[in-house]
Amino acid sequence: MVYALPVRLSDDQRELRDTVRSFLDARPGTSWERICGDLGIAGLAIPERYGGAGRGLAEVSVVCEELGRALSPLPYLQTVVLAASALVAGGDEDAMSRLLPALAAGTATATVILPSDADLTLTGDRLTGTAGHALDGEIVLAFVGDALVEAVPTRRVPYVTLDRTRPLVELTFDGVPARRAGDGAAAAMVRDTGVAGLAAEQVGGASRCLASAVAHALRRHQFGRPIGSFQAVKHKLADVLLLVESARSAAYAAARADPADLPVVAAIAGSYCTEAYLAAAGENIQIHGGLGITWEHDAHLAFKRATSDAQLLGPPQSHRARLASAAGL
View 1: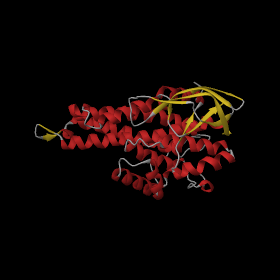
View 2 (view 1 turned 90 degrees about the vertical axis):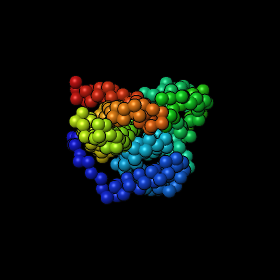
View 3 (view 1 turned 120 degrees about the vertical axis):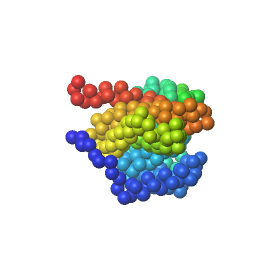
């Protein structure tokens, strides 16, 4: 059974949140190697025997929320949430020993191609096909049939996308050697884990939009009063606050769900958090007025990220379709 969980962090998780937030605030342009070396966030969910901390999705989601709040371009979602979880779930000792220590140390990045995101064929030990609009990473893993494999793409073609903070590439494999990296049965679980991590990012982004809108409403004056004192603006901000806190509850529930409940809870979070972020980003622009649509203000960056995220691991409609199927509708 799926239970609604209170929005509550443990003392350790609050300390993790505060540490990551202060680090990102002080070093907004930090590199992947620097943040992993200083904070060790890449190894949170990697077992200790491979250089990680042996924690879980709950701690990873705390980091995701802060990265989303900072609109960070760091490859945490694909490397930690997707690739590391795919390798651990795949259970191949050789692949884990070979790849996880570098991921935990932050000396390598990785990405995962999910079955629904590509047209790939594995013939013997040769991989052929194309994955369009994939998250970029140095190490490329792909779910093909009943296997998780590692392969080096023949070509990487970067896209010019709406959201420049989330680089996407087209990966082409022309019969390249593929090395088995685990069991392919975990593909659905890895996608659900990615949806949960992305939902936490979306909550962080939505909370950033709310904070920005509130700050502007208190600072901007019209008719001798802050615009935040006007009822129409108050109602907008209250609606966004409700969306953000409800989305946080959904994301926290997904991050803490039992494996049996994860498909349903992740679909709830994927649907709700996506739409909450889109709404918060849109209202942030509205409350800022003309300033919100200028290139100099960062409101447009959050709106672009929200729009991109809405397609990344499936739009809200696809998540709701999964819920309807689970409910037998």
